[in-house]
Each structure stands twice: as structure tokens, then as C-alpha cells.
Image (cartoon, rainbow, N blue to C red):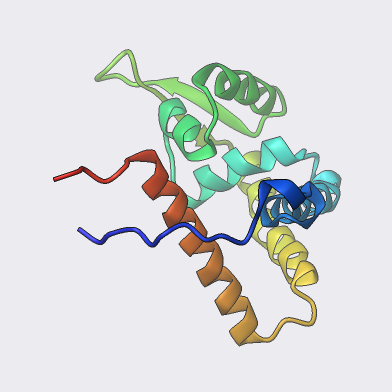
Length: 163
């Protein structure tokens, strides 16, 4: 088991400002990505909340309501309401499993397949626009830094056992 690194000491309570924090900046970047992706997918009739489940279904990351909820980090009730809207648009359909009544499968309709095909291009355009001026090595470094932060955050969930 790898021992987590000691916490950094970059921030201090006495001079902490949200605007200068990495978390605040990441949230602003995420909000910008969300807004621009929503605008980019508006012509195909998708909101930000609606493209993600279609993308997960298209990529094979999920095939049931429960899997979608986990993949989207949403509660099952919110996922069901989102699927209601997508079904009303004719983009997907839910099919109860023949072998386990508790399982509800989700699949794209032909129209949903067509719409979902536009999502990777839109995401690529928006991401590339936000990365304008970055070198390939800077882009790779940024991804590495973010992955490290995620790993550090995961280690906070399960404190190491004392022994």
C-alpha cells in the first residue's frame, strides 16, 4: 500500500480567498466548458444535462438506469427524470430486463444514435478551444496534475489504517 503524500501547505486560513484557490478556478473552467458545450449542442436539441447520458450510452459506458446514475454521479431519481425527458424527445428508450424485473436497460433510438454522433465532435471543439495556446506537454502535464488531485481526494475518503 502506497502511503499518501503529506498535505501541502499552500493555503492559509488568515489570507485565504476563494478567487485565488485552485478549486474555484477549476469550478470556473468547468462552468465555462459546460456553458460552451451546451451552446454547441443546442442546434441538435440537447442541453448540458442531456448530452452526458447519450454519450455514455453511445460509448458503452452504461446500459442500465443504475449504471447511468453511477456514471453520471446522479441519484437514481434524477436519472429517471432525465431519461423521461430524453424519451419524450425520442432519443432513448427504457426496456425492463426479461431476466430480472429490477433491472431497466436503456438504449438509444435511431434518432438518439444520430444525435449522439455529434457529441464527440462538440466536446472536442470546446475542449480544444479552452486549451488554445497549450503545448502538448502542457496539456499532458495538466491532465497528470488533475489525476493526482483526484487520487489525493480519493485517499481522503478512506484514511489509511493505523497499525
